[in-house]
Length: 177
Length: 350
Image (cartoon, rainbow over all chains, first blue to last red; front, side, top):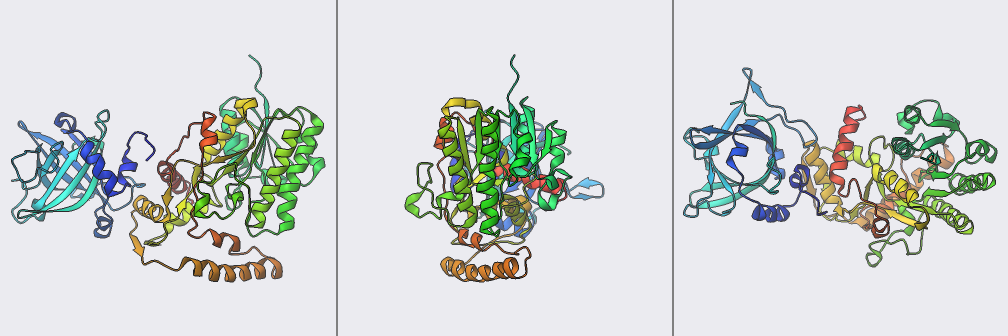
């Protein structure tokens, strides 16, 4: 690394070892800075390219006092391409909803106490929705940059947690929900 | 306020020359741009010629040929600073052609400048490859190491570098010989340009797992930025300067990076016998080049000397340049490579 400020491209193309260090050193994101916005996202795992979803957007919105979020489907492409929503019936496709809250020490998903948890076992997802087994940790790598975030996704299979991929988020546009 | 020096840029219509002209003009220097008469006629992407850049920058564009001393007299009139970029950059060219342009042309230019007597700075484009094919104990390559050029192109550049350093030492002139590594950026057609465009087209992106040699990089903006920075330092500069960014990206990492940029599938292949490939493919390439160049008198589809760079580990020290106070615009090549890829796409090159 060069010692320069972290940016989206650097995070999106760095090794897992480096990202793990960044995740541990990051600060808990301010919910107020997330609410009402969509962020362009990129999974760092090569397998996600094969499966066709390296790119996505994550949106955040207020539901009363609670913070919740959703994913937006994006046309396949790379980091050098723009993020273009997949549109169905004139609307971008939203799926994979989640509840957002600070990691709770007493719960099973407490690996990174400095992060927010994105818990997909949300009542907004149907019982048969496979995304319900996802758990994402989210940190802000640079305290001075509330537009850039690093996440780490796990599958929750019973008591087991299986690492899936790191992902990077950067502020893109206001929420379209 | 005194007027800024008159700068001569040779090879001004090419990739690096056009960027040098732009930077000098942006910084208020008076620029005389020169290149071969055919190069000054009009833009030709296939040949990497962009005279429109010099015209747009407001430079005085004067055609000349380094191998024709008479044509250099007018070009060198009143010139105070020189950015000597022109050269024959082709690994498959004959030794006679390489020597005539790279060494002989440099000597002709120095002779013309000597006769005019206005020269204050001479910045020359050498080559990062003049150290030879390094062994692990030689890395990182430093400017105080002896040169050992492994092929005709680099031998001609090495001789040209020596011409410049000898001339400038004799005349006590501030000078710098830039040794750029793999130069990439907008308008690159050859070398780094081929690499970026080739990587961007590779789908799926395949790479043997043992391709762990590091690839040295430098963005063209940093090459011309370093050149101007050194010229502005004045008396403190002398001899060669490696021009290389801070990165140490391996070939596997590079292929993966391009796959991420383009959205192509990245596949790591089993290791391959590199020495065997270098030797086998090298021999075939030598024959193909011989047949094309010396028998059929056409451009060779392959450059035999480049095969020796396959999975060859290169790292360069840039401490000498940094010690002068130069700060890289692109210390990490990733943003620059992404921007370059996007530029190729916008311009329809990809």
